[in-house]
Image 1 (cartoon, rainbow, N blue to C red):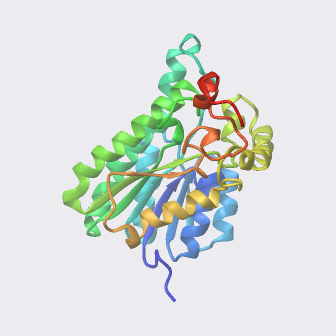
Image 2 (tube, helix red, strand yellow):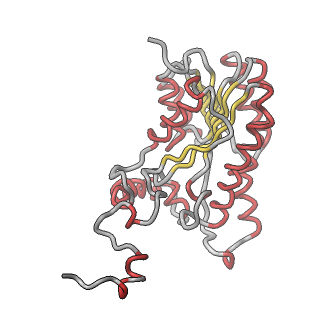
Length: 283
């Protein structure tokens, strides 16, 4: 039985760890040839060795347009074209309040999280048009939907990604290119540790803490894992979503459903507490 991406070629940025790695692995399992674009060269070389002939690694700092263009062109030169782009490379930051905003760091966050995907789409679209269309998936976040789920610059950038995806979907629709975003919730990756300024090795260890504690904070009592986002990316990349464009898919275990009282019977409702004095006396 053919895979859902049989015969397709994909580029995945941030493709050698976390959500990106999970997506590369799933895309390959579903029949795709993949260019994994990242800045972790050692991990990239190991990934090529794991999937000879199916995965090529491209060193790609998404703040450098030339490196984005080269990664996209590698898909064409190595595998014959491009059908799918997953703009997934990301970072976080420690600027949690307006008082902590640093102009240069703010620009750096937006360069990676917003400008990088914009340039990826710019260079991918012509190759997709040559193939008769394609699918672009951008990683956003629940932090782009609600306050309180991330630092200020990160949250603002992810909100921009959601709207940019909608606008790009409109512009690229005549070329039969679909554009959608994914909004992950608490996923067990190193990005949480990185947002606290921890070294990469320590940040990787912190992912285990997220996996341990996240189930207690959301209606679905399961840790969010990279493969959960990879499956959403597979749906949006494949022909299964041929009628889906310009929207965002929330993959968060239900954490944005509402306050804890909306899903946990043991949690007190703030509304009921507010009007408790008006409650009729118990019989």
